[in-house]
Each structure stands twice: as C-alpha cells, then as structure tokens.
Image 1 (cartoon, rainbow, N blue to C red):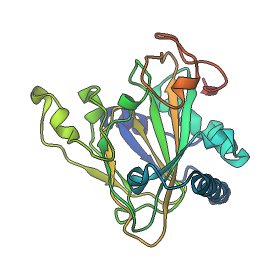
Image 2 (image 1 turned 120 degrees about the vertical axis):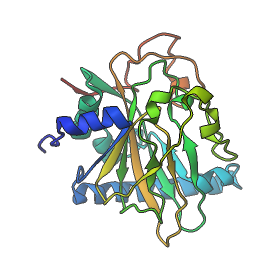
Image 3 (image 1 turned 45 degrees about the vertical axis):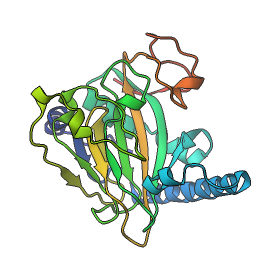
Image 4 (image 1 turned 90 degrees about the vertical axis):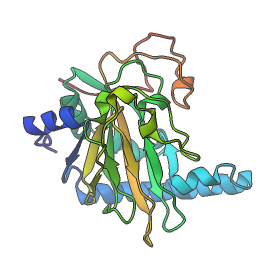
Length: 261
C-alpha cells in the first residue's frame, strides 16, 4: 500500500496543537480483519476472567476494557501493529529518523454500562524520560460524541508533565496546571469514521465520554517512540519485563523499529 499523503501543514498542526486527525488511513477490509481478531481476544479474555472469578477491576472496566500488547498473541493484530504505513506517519509527525513500538492496546467502551475516561496525559504512566512519544488512536467503529469519541485540549502538550490521574477516582487534571500557566481551556471533540485515526503527543490532555449507545466503541491504539527515548523507572506492565536500566535507550524485541527514514 502506498504511503499516507501526510502534508507539511498537518505535521505543523500536530506540532502546534499536540494532536491531529487523519481520514481514511486504514482500508475497511483491514478494519474488518482487526474487528474479527479483537472479537476473538475479547472472548479469550472473558474465559480467563470467568476462570479467575469475580472481577477485581470492575470499576476500571466501566471506563474501558483495555487489553495490552495483543500483537504478541494474535497474528492479524500483529500485522497491523507492525504496519509501516501507520508507523511512517508517526515518524514523520515526530520528525524522527526512526520510531519504535512502545506497546499497543485495544480500548473498548461497552454500550450503556460505561463511564467517561477522565482528562489525563499519557506520559505520567510510562517509564520514559523524554516527552516525544505519540499514540495512534485508530477507530474500528464510527466514533461520535454519543459513543465516546476523543476530546483534546489544543496546545496542552506544552504545559509539561503533570501527575498521573487515577482513572477510577480521578482528580481534576486542570487544577494540577501551575497557576502561572493556567488559562481558559477549550475542549475539541474529534469524531472519526471507521478506519480514520488521531495521533496525539504523550503530554496532550485528552478525554473520552461514556458510550451511551447500543453498540461497543472499539479502538486500536499503537504508541510509537521516536529515536533517543530513554528508560526511567515508572512501574508499567510492559516496561517492567524489559529489564532496562535508568537512562538506557529503549531497544530489543519488545520495542522493534517500525519505520525509519
């Protein structure tokens, strides 16, 4: 498949605002393959949960059902995650010589029995010293305000790293902004058609509302690390098994290079 036609204007929009919306990145036949693989993953997860007994994180799953690094288990998801076409967008947005995979995860907001995802930044949860990682949030369904589309605060990635937010009992992220930088924040909702996506910086404030519809809202999220990102100790399910030491650049089979210039 040919390279996505990413213009310099879109790159500059991303740099200024901390996010960008891109239309028609993934063909519908590939979306359908991902949906089928995700359905299998959800059923596998359900069987594991039933075997373990009552959910310990039921309130968290009202925010979203999250399944991390499905690319390691499901070939169709691996094919997508290692897709150079999408990774090349990340490389160009970050103006980097290459981008590595940090991890991928599926995010599903169940119909009706759903809570909002609190305003937060991503980086406080990740063991990275630098602030240049970026996420591709790929819509596997049409995404609207009613079923929980993403909202962003333009330019918020320039406010610096704040504390991590408890997504079950969330604090007010905006009250964490130093008073000297505090200003009126305006939220931008970003509805998406199936196969379209957003990219956002790891410091950009973002939020997703509850799913108030009769169908699940499914997204596949892939996080990319530009060249030069180094490890700093923050507990994380992916970082903890990589055996990295403080200050070491991410490398190895868990974090393959997906696109390079």
